[in-house]
Image (cartoon, rainbow, N blue to C red; front, side, top):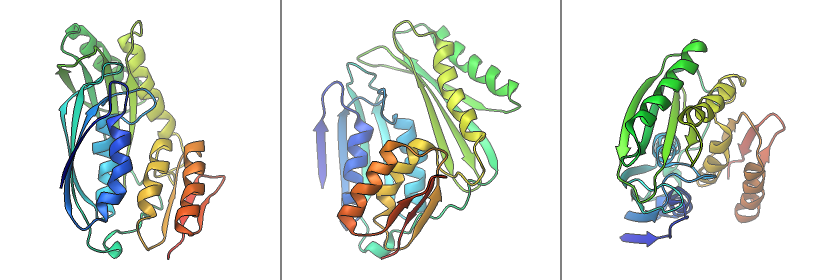
Length: 262
């Protein structure tokens, strides 16, 4: 089937798609969902995080999905357009548990410096230069790309993805009026460096842990992973899943998350 939602100017397309994906993933049918709204909002995963981090781990669990950014939409005007295509699994057994004993060694860091096409080009350059400067000082290399988007609201974003031998993690900096381009880059770099300083056993960044927990509950097998920070989002989601699934879902003080097998 095909569904289209317009969630208004301030709504997050990523949060809507993460809400409907679990049901679509086990529906046994192919589905396309189009969501119009904000693609790069404060307090929500940006599109690149949804596609290149959350989506990658979802595919590691056996889910088949495709995500496309048809139009960017910065807060507050929104107006972005995201397309999700899902091939639903026939059986629960088709969903593999999420088992990540560690993130493994760092393979590479990829980055995006993006902004509305209505803004001066030097913003893209300054964001990229600051990322390069900060990571070089930390002894790290990064492969950056620049993109200029037509958007309803002016805005900028820096997104960094760390690719490890066993998984991925993502970090965002979002612009706003009066915020220097360098500060946008710093937000993403600071979050990345903090994650890299966490123990190697921490396979998931703080935001990814609660997002993947919902998908882990779809699998009949035992899921086990560790995150670098226990958030209230994670503990709340664990409590909700215990009530809905009647399974043992535990979050340890060191960030170890376990979903018991059925």
